[in-house]
Image 1 (cartoon, rainbow, N blue to C red):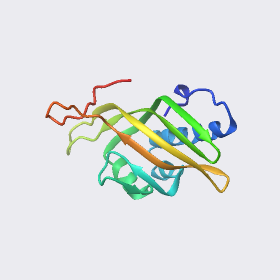
Image 2 (image 1 turned 135 degrees about the vertical axis):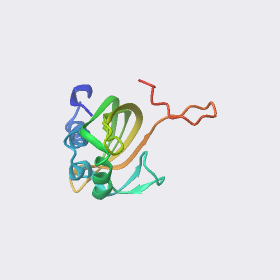
Image 3 (image 1 turned 45 degrees about the vertical axis):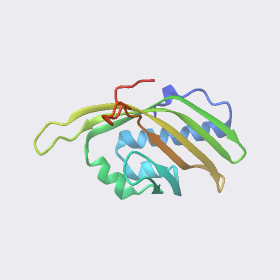
Image 4 (image 1 turned 30 degrees about the horizontal axis):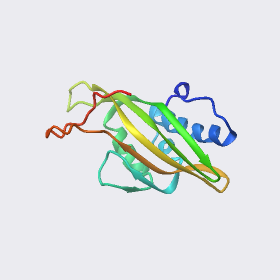
Length: 155
């Protein structure tokens, strides 16, 4: 979630929330499962691309296993990410582009992956610090009967 694509924050709260979003981006680049989990509240509700339908918090072990399926750093770019803040809660939504090289099978060379997904995040101020308490990411799929994910779409 590149900082260059995020707008100039209008408040200290917004700056702190954007810093959380950027911390998630940096952790992907650094391949740090602990860093990926750090911005989230312990029991954040996560609706991401990996089954099951929902996760209770971010599992460092699950992130570590997922990172093992990639070669090199991962890119996570935010675009059109907007934040609305009301008191101790905030809501953000926009697009995320995940990019990297998936490991091949056995001795195959990894292959590049790059796709956009929709993202919604809810933030809460907990013990004086902003944390991600809910995240929903999704990829649309073609409604032509093929059920193919629409990885070719761009914002």
